Amino acid sequence: MPLSPQQMQAIYMATTVIRRPRFGIVSGYHELPYVCIGASFEPSKGATRVKGRVHVSPRFVIRPAHCEPSYEEIFGAENVDKAIAGRVFGYLGFRNKPVECSSEYLELKHLDQTVDQVLGESLSELDRMEDITTGVFITPDSRYYPLSVERFVSSILEDEFSV
Image 1 (tube, helix red, strand yellow):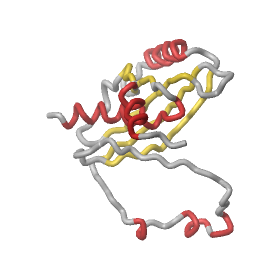
Image 2 (cartoon, helix red, strand yellow):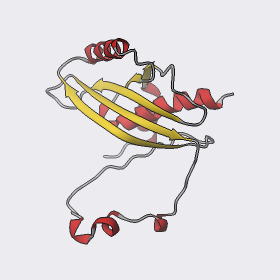
Image 3 (spheres, one colour):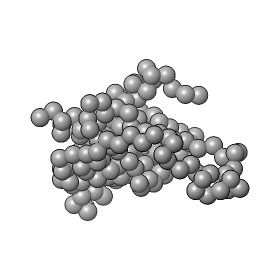
């Protein structure tokens, strides 16, 4: 069931950024590692943790669909399984900002701990590693964590482009 624009806006606005990167922001280009934590949508688990890395580039590239090879063109029709359902998401909240975002790394885990315990452990681990580039935020709905990732990236872009 798709979300309404109001539901998406509510998740976006309810995302709480706990820790922002203190290093690694270069005007127009960044690699933004993050840890997104929220209540698990798995009934037997307490929290979901998503670790990822978003690349923000100063270029905004729009490619027409006919210029992109399709999966079928690359791998052949015999390797396309129509029964497989996929999910595609993009970051759409960057109006009037000349950037392109992509995500290359993603790790999703359902954990037995509470959101507060996972948050404490994640912050402690980042402190022990002296990591000042990774952001941490809490999502109100783990199923739709990409909306919270968008909020995190957007909060950084808002500061960058507000000059």
